[in-house]
Image 1: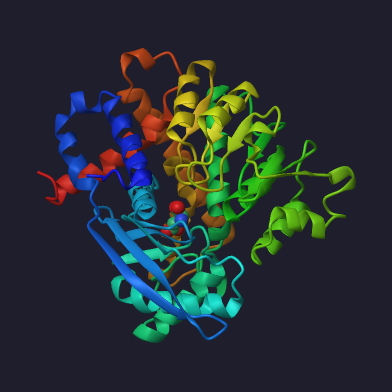
Image 2: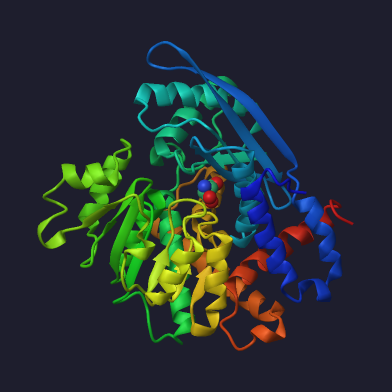
Length: 455
Ligand code: GLU
């Protein structure tokens, strides 16, 4: 059971359990209750010291972790996060979410998460490389293509995956698909970088289609996005391609707002500068000509976009956990927002979810991260499949598979929500919060019964 000193994990646990309890699932199948105390304890947690050499020749020490949460559906699978806030509560929440998210992809992957309280911001490339080698020196013995396959998350992109892959291969004398998000020339999958952002947009396409009976699409919609990393960048590019206006992006220091729409060139400039840890404030100042004139953006320091973006139809929180408060959720609803889908994991606070769910009767529709952002790990699953077969699929083929996975995920969440909704809910749009949690849970729970882990 979660301990009170793990607030993020407790929050993720409460979200799942209250979604299950607030449905007819346990009345119809009471045996599922037995799964909760088992599934909420990780199969294994590995914690290790990462001692590495900085550019001054000094030793620095960080705490490394891998939470191998659940392997009922396949090898443990989930990203690595390098961020100073990383601790066991954060990694247990992320690992717990990952179990049910991976189940929702329909692919054969268990759930896990790992990372380190190392802060990559302001570090040189050499320091990042030495850190990654030191981190993998410990992690290498616990992972494997049929055991546990990490990938990226906040602070871990293709550069870090490359350094860790190289370190693993040197240490183990073994070239296999032990990480996903690899470079395209050495085992990576086309569309993996785009997958989380594109996937969120494909999921919301279905929400809009269903809610409007096919009358509306992304065309002409105003979309508020937070974050400016991998997920936010590709979500923004895809919604622009589909005819929407992106009114915001953000980072940990502030946000940019554009009433006419952030342009693909601006997004590409942000992507290039973010690899070097530049802030949006620095980027908009340093590339002033790109961010002025008819494409002017307003930079607002110290705030998230939600209360500054004006009228919007769609909000895609794509930065980090708990990035939408109850007050901000109210502001979004008042600004006309009808669709909220999380590119980030647990992007909404409990208070924000309560606001969105309470407004379902007014056609506000909320999709939790475990459903809306499963496209990233789904294409990781496709990368594993390509590695096993030693083949490379074309971009169009991967994109088509990703679309199908997101559409099927939406259909499953929708159908499950409708099936297990309590009577009082019947006249509203079905709760995707419940649909996602119940669908993911049933799949994992059934596998655990079959494998004798619950009886
Ligand atoms: N970190 C991503 C997530 O939260 C991707 C994990 C993966 O590709 O294994 O789902």
